[in-house]
Length: 360
Ligand SMILES: *[C@@H]1O[C@H](CO)[C@@H](O)[C@H](O)[C@H]1NC(C)=O
Ligand SMILES: *[C@@H]1O[C@H](CO)[C@@H](O)[C@H](O)[C@H]1NC(C)=O
Ligand SMILES: *[C@@H]1O[C@H](CO)[C@@H](O)[C@H](O)[C@H]1NC(C)=O
View 1 (cartoon, protein in one colour):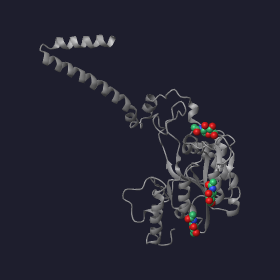
View 2 (cartoon, rainbow, N blue to C red):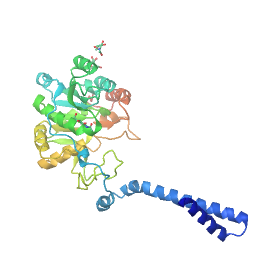
View 3 (cartoon, helix red, strand yellow):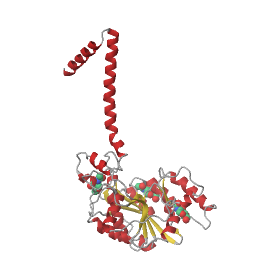
View 4 (tube, protein in one colour):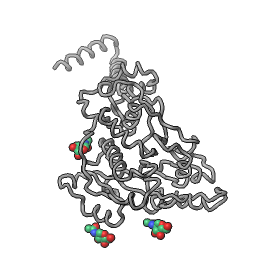
């Protein structure tokens, strides 16, 4: 009713502005379109404002000022840790039997069998490198199906009996629970592999050059050491659409302490106990790599940059040399299927003049 009145008034106004019928309808149309444009413009402006402003995020004060968190409970940004989680699949004796120099732990969802098989055929199958033993383990939580039962699913149990490289803990495997996975990893390493020199948490979609990694570690500090792609002065993301959003109410600081990107970080085994100690004092935020950084800061430990800036790479560079894969330690791949091809290339490079002494 009110709308009709307004439209009528608008029509009267337009009519009073024009004398002839043709000119009048033109003016009406014109008015209608300008109103429409105004409405659309306003909508676009407001919906793009947050992302536009996030480009300005280098002004933390503006960042803090603009973003107010949606009305969600802040508990959503923290995980249930410390808490007693139990391993329903374990490999309690492998480290004692194998005495690895380096232990690779690969977080992967339970259903991701294919990815595990690809890793087993590629970098997971590098068990002796430069005379040192390297062991790998896949770390799983519970799938939604397996959650109620407290037992591993038959398929996973079967795979575990076949390969003896699966660890499964009894929390729900989800993106928001990755911090639990990481902490459970530290617990497992500290109790099952305390004599190993180093461990690496490495994502399943990564290329990993184990040879280069062991080579680096043989020259690395042996105590309180952590390296990888170290992020320094990274801004806390206040855009609620981001996968890594944290509201001011949950995390008031505007910059994170230094942390190693979760894709792949390496640490000396003595750190595992220390980080676990710190975790009882530091509230467990859901962004796992940031959380490890917060524990490191709490302990007063610094992160070490890799000896060479080109070792831990994020994406495959557009122009990569003929010896790219033998020159890096990690690179993120678009998916784990790509790893089979990349691995072939890596092996070929390793046979070529890329490596004067052997490098694979
Ligand atoms: C791992 O490498 C060995 C040779 O070193 C080979 O016999 C074995 O089949 C490989 N395993 C897989 C799963 O490819
Ligand atoms: C268990 O693994 C074997 C191969 O090792 C396979 O033949 C069998 O079908 C598997 N069973 C299940 C339930 O996946
Ligand atoms: C995290 O795991 C706990 C324990 O299994 C579960 O209760 C919770 O729902 C999980 N949270 C998410 C967000 O998946």
